[in-house]
Image (cartoon, rainbow, N blue to C red; front, side, top):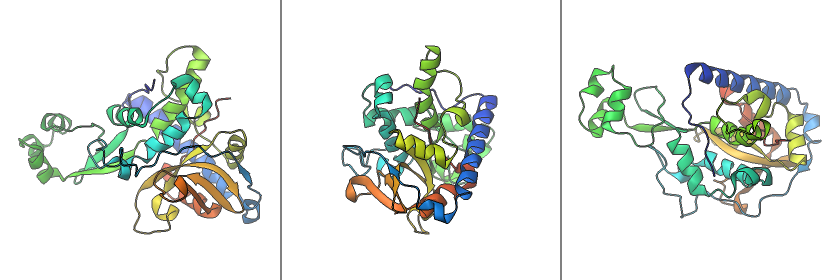
Length: 286
């Protein structure tokens, strides 16, 4: 059964996990940037692809509302990356079979579906905003507090705009079986992201893939798709390298059953493009 902790933690815990996220990203950035072009051709490792890949465009859930903003087909990529993790034998042993609907629900009800009002920078993570909940959050905003309907609030503060799924969802998902194995207790404490749930180097990525553990990664959309009009970030799962190309499973790639090959250097650039959002995850609990 899937039961990750809620996104909201104390300010001190959030600062700690954010700092760990930034440090792990810096380590990975240094490792990638230290590679010579001649070394890219030596990256030649791959693992067996999944027998079945859940696709974002599946009509079973494509138009399902996902939190306060957007639909699964537009914003559910973190859920599909999570599904690949959860289908690995080591995670099935702990969680059992987990459906896509369980993952969607866990992300949006536990606060990992992030959005904001267009004119206000504050990130929000409530699944179904109401007049009362928004007034409580923005209790010091006289204009919002004077509103009586959601449409009035949106006319003042702008309509909801999606930010995306929080990367920390993957950290907790991966850490929970590890913590349980170490302590025998349920997972309650914040994740030590740098030491447990993130890959810190190219060598670690290669080792994980060679050991049968794919690597979820966060990429910049415009570079990943080579399209300047594509914005924001995207989650895909790396399954190997072959002939100067990376092999990724991408829930939004409606060709080749979700398996995409992309030049390695383009993928690395997409990983590193957003300095404070660099992330590659370590599914190897060994």
